[in-house]
Image 1 (tube, rainbow, N blue to C red):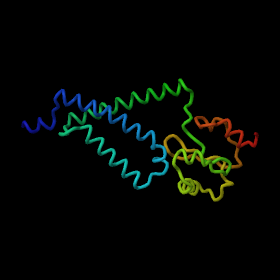
Image 2 (tube, rainbow, N blue to C red):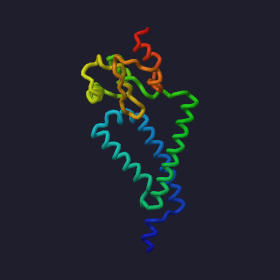
Image 3 (cartoon, helix red, strand yellow):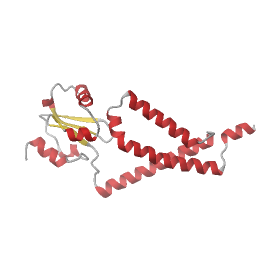
Image 4 (cartoon, one colour):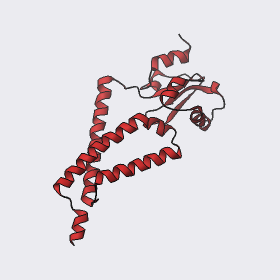
Length: 185
């Protein structure tokens, strides 16, 4: 019975170490995803998925310490959910304070690929054309805008159809994009 208590229980120092390691690893993992996350979600290769899986396993194991216990796992989950809730509130307050943070970016405008945005997000033509083919695009002339969204997905707007300004809410350089689409300098 003592063995069952050993795997279910948790000492105060162990609880503190789980909370501390969860907080530190949460911020480290968030920094990694902030740097490469949007690109990884835009075009997840098998290697990207394997790396994220391995990172998750390493982080999970590091959080739980030498002997993973049920109570330690529950404490780590509670800490992670608390941190994510807090991070969500911070992100919302930043959006209110700074306006829309413009994290979405146009990677193709009026049939022309924006090389600077593609490079900034570490994307290549293969990824872009894969998305365009999936949308039924046969020629760059059919494209008004391709937008890389904050979640890594692509949005596609067809050429020849009017674009309402609200459709570009949250997109970097939205006024300039609208002017370029309408043909005004």
